[in-house]
Image 1 (cartoon, rainbow, N blue to C red):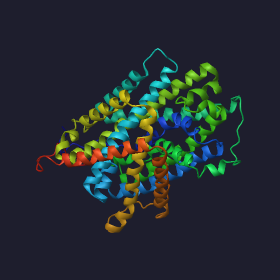
Image 2: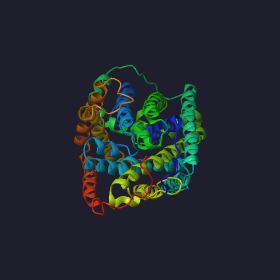
Image 3: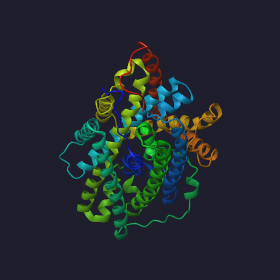
Amino acid sequence: MTTPDRTPVKVGLLTAASLVVANMVGTGIFTSVGFQVEYLDSPFALLMLWAVGGVISLCGALTYGELGAALPRSGGEYHLISELYHPSLGFIAGWISATLGFAGPTALAAIAFGDYTTAVFPSLSSTHLAAGIVLLCSAIHATSITWGSWFQNAFTALKVLLILVFVGAAVRADPTHSITVAPSGDGPNELLSPGFAVSLVFVSYAYAGWNAAIYIVGEIRDPQRNLPLSLVLGTALVTVLYVLLNFVFLYTVPAQEMAGEVEVGFLAGSVIFGDAGGEVMSLFIALLLVSTVSALVYLGPRVTQAMGEDAPALRWLAVTNDRGIPVNSILFQLGLALLFIYTSTFDQVLVYAGFTLILSTMVTVAGVFVLRWRRPEIDRPYKTWGYPVTPLLFLAANAWILVYVFLDRPTESLIGLGIVAVGAALYFASQWGAPDEAPVSGPRP
């Protein structure tokens, strides 16, 4: 366990922004397009889908910047909602983050890693490969924050480079079809369709990491400056990359061939580079998914660690080693991720995770109004740009998404709400324990 006088390792703006980019660019962008073309026919509507998703996420990032700078403690939605509303709601948000926010997406990114790898090496087990990469990243981040940061930054840089190479190489492709991105036909009408709203769930999931740095705010140097910067810069960069990537997918692969397919990057790579090039591209995508798994493994345990510091029954999750690393929380998330990998289908996890995470982020963003009303005197090193329009736009867009998703996918939506109910039950159970039990580590970050 850590000693109270030990100085924790801090990360800078580069690593914080790297975590945002790595957490965002992963499973969603390379796997969800095949599901979106089942709802939307127009290339214009599909590209607007990703642009709108970027704007919504940027509004959320701007708002989270104010909340995180004013209330700088690691733990993400768990900490913020506990401070803004009530510890019970914060615990539920933490439970959502621990299960669907990190363990679920960790499993999804790992499954995609396995699928892309076995597209080249079909004799290997996709499921075991998925489990193996989660085990590897967990071992690295449980060993050293410094080495984990280097590992994270290197694979994130590789990820961005590979995306730019992929986009640039598409110029030389010779696709068998043609597209136009200008609005025509039913394209503008599709922007207001239920299919557009449902597709935004997949897009929202792909953008889900825009709030990544908030989970480690206590470990960021100069968080009042670097937290808002990392959120906004990371989200803006990813929005540009996403629109470019989706144009490449639509330009190179006919929509009917992408429909329902997970390995969209493999299909596009085959058109751009030929069959052998497609296999190489699959391996590249598998490699860049490593940074996504790594980021999720790094961030998620900070939520359960914060929960363990506050809930007596979960105190074991707050235990840290002599390097200040929450090893028990890492092992807990590892177990949940492996459970998802071996028991759930990709599409199911994607929808009910997306639905539930939107609920949690909406409650958090609404908290900026609560904070300004209840605590007007608090120091605000950063204020939300465009307030109150930006948070209201985020809330309105996501409320619209939730209504349509619940109507279109009620089973998955109810599963998500069921997970929320489990979190509520666990909160009351977690209150059992000695309230005067000694803390397990030094001061809170």
